[in-house]
Length: 307
Image (cartoon, rainbow, N blue to C red):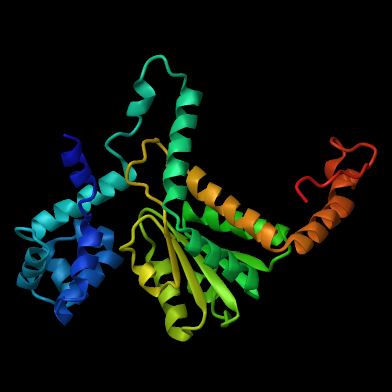
């Protein structure tokens, strides 16, 4: 019973399946594969005729492509796309863990979040993590990009780096397109991209533009799927496994935990810089009644912990 379950868990999803076959695909089939990866909603819901017209291939080509991946036809491939979306947004085990009697909600959520964080952190390779931290620490500027839910992660990392006196910028969709926000990056900079769940075409276009513009600019990606298109443009890639998530709303505890680890390691690599920054923060902000009067009515200087 256990062996069957483990086999089922390791079965590739539709995007991983495309990635496995991608190198051996013909030019036409690669066009179809690229369209599916970049246009998940269209590939899932548009009529076959409209899809073939938009890609510039025949209906028969779509059917043959599906058979190369091991499906009976394009309709079965489409069903796998629907299944992929459903698992991302509505996991099959969602909220079932909340129904167990005798376990208070707060305690249960805490335990699940801990399991999720442990699963994520144990999958991170120490060497890759060290290289990431060194890359950030040595970069002239760090640009953190995210779309939708992922924008919170980008903002959190940029905030932490700014607090430690690193030049970091958060890039999310506001008045200007994402691609416009990264036009002035150069080879001394680094772009860190968070793109979880349903991928944004605008994020993909921005990353591909930057990679084609200058291959010396370092790009780091954080996704929940190794088959994500932006991974092909990355110097370093990290993955957050969201496939078994059981919360009603996707928890960001594991990605946040990983970002905390990044910031803590940067402090360890730059202790003098961190000490100087935190002391200045104490002097200018914490000791100023305008900012923290309720915690420091007499303007006392606080000791710096951990330094």
